Length: 116
Image 1 (cartoon, rainbow, N blue to C red):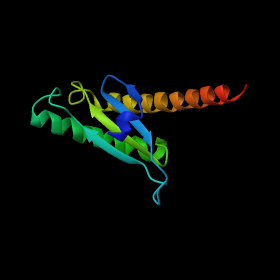
Image 2 (cartoon, rainbow, N blue to C red; image 1 turned 45 degrees about the vertical axis):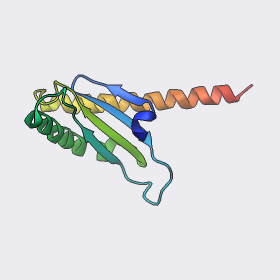
Image 3 (cartoon, rainbow, N blue to C red; image 1 turned 120 degrees about the horizontal axis):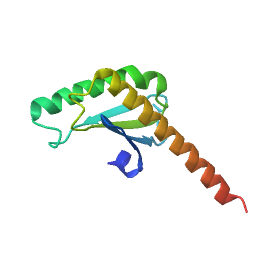
């Protein structure tokens, strides 16, 4: 819920990525990830397969590219279960870049508003 409320998201063909900076805690150095697949994705077998694929993609990309102290939610789309794995990896890398660029734009805009 908190991650969705942050309004930081990127949509790709195979997944949707949402991100939120975690409030300062003792464990501020780690990346946390959640996975979801609604009934729109398909039956339970398809949803579980989509989530397994998202877990594998996240395990490959987020340890190196994820920002410490950030919570991510990966949302499966209808194409997630059948999309080639390499394309899903590219989707997550692209979505992660979009989310990070959006953060940079927000920081610049906030800094510009503070200057008079």
